[in-house]
Amino acid sequence: MERFEGSKRVRMGLKGTKAEKKVFYDKKLVELLEEYSQVLICQVNNVGSKQLQGIRNLRPDFVVLMGKNTMMKRSIRIHVEKTGNQDFEQLLRALEGH
Image (cartoon, rainbow, N blue to C red):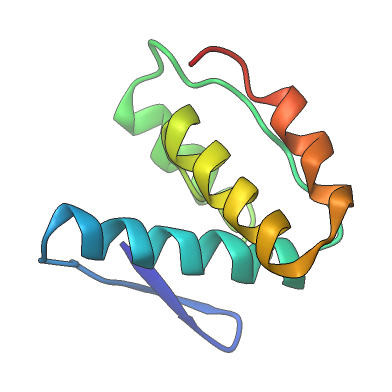
């Protein structure tokens, strides 16, 4: 897991229950959705860890947050319900699968 201090990314190892990890992921995704005006959603099936790390290091001014479809959908739905901001529902259509 990661957290941010200003624009600096800090690696975090979150040790806790599944429920605590879900809450942390919900919070992080919502923070990023509120902070940034653009989102890129892509699948990374069969992409090696070395290649993913290379992508993360391309530019220091963007953030990579990875998660499972169901987790991302859950977080977005909760955020839409809490805020009433229906604009984020468009992201749900971009998330394929489960």
